[in-house]
Every structure is written in C-alpha cells, then in structure tokens.
Image (cartoon, rainbow, N blue to C red; front, side, top):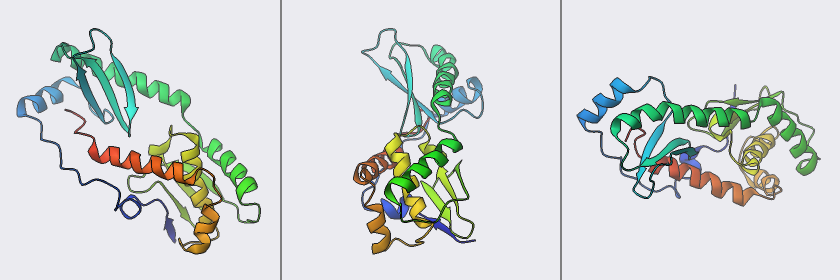
Length: 211
C-alpha cells in the first residue's frame, strides 16, 4: 500500500524548529526515588515548582506533556504522592472532552461539502491513531485516513486543517501546485500551521518528564 505522509514533522518544520540541547540527566538519587515511589507507565509529565504558589496545585497538558504546578516549599514526599492524582485529573478531563472517530468523519463530511464540493472522492474510514512522526496520513489505495492521537484535544481548526490536508490526498498524492491550491481553500491554514510549528517546537524544548 502507498501511504502518503502529510504533516511529516522532520520535513515540514526542519527550518523552523529550534536546535535544542538535551536536558541534563537526572541525578542517581532522583532516578532511584522516582523509580521506587511512582507507578509504572505514567504518561509524560514534568513538575514545575513556584515560589509564588503558597498552597495551590494545578495540572494541565502543554505541548503533549502534563505539567504539574506545585508550591516550591512542598516536600519531595508530598510531590511524589500528588503526581499520580494530578495526572489522573488531567486524563479524566481529557477523556470527557476527547473527540471520537465519529466526530472526525462528521468533520470530514462538512469540510468536503464546504471547501471541496468538486471532489467525488470519499474516505472509507477516518480514525485516530498513535503516531509520533506524523500529524496524519492517507493511504490512497484504500482511501483510509489516520490522524495523530497527539492532536486529540487540540483546537478544532487545527484538527480540521490536518484532516483537510488528508482529504485532498484522496485525489492528489503529492504536494505540488494543484495540492497547494486546494489547501489554500481552508481559511485557517496559516493559523493552524503556526499552531503546529509551536506545538512541535514546544515538544523539542520540553525537559525530561521526570525532572
């Protein structure tokens, strides 16, 4: 099968992504403490201490990483106890707001009707898929589309832009002038691509999740 790679991060953002140095490794004592105290298979996270926080604790996902904000004076023992709880809060919140495969198919139908009325091609299936190197892909031979699970929860216009990109690949496998002309029909294209560039740059700059 021929699989068309659309938003391939290395090629699309090679000129825009910063050249980041890897974060310093954890000290042996930190690694030992983390391995002994935390459950296995936690999603990627990082803890951010702030001297301005006195008691409040919050957690949110930034650029694919769960950030847990705690007071600077919190003890290491309390920090390790709160991490799984705060991660669970974020995951529950995301599950409630997560888009489904059905939503992707409904979005595709609207995009085709609004911006590609001259297209007779239709996808056989559109699904979320775990992909680390692509935002989405389209297999032209069987007309199936996959969207990176990392974007689930991103702004609607970003998901729509990636999906629109893939819908065009149902007819045009490459990224030449004809493809670009179709892609320019999407009104939030520049805004969405800027978001994706920032998202990927943020991933490159994020420190080790166990710092």
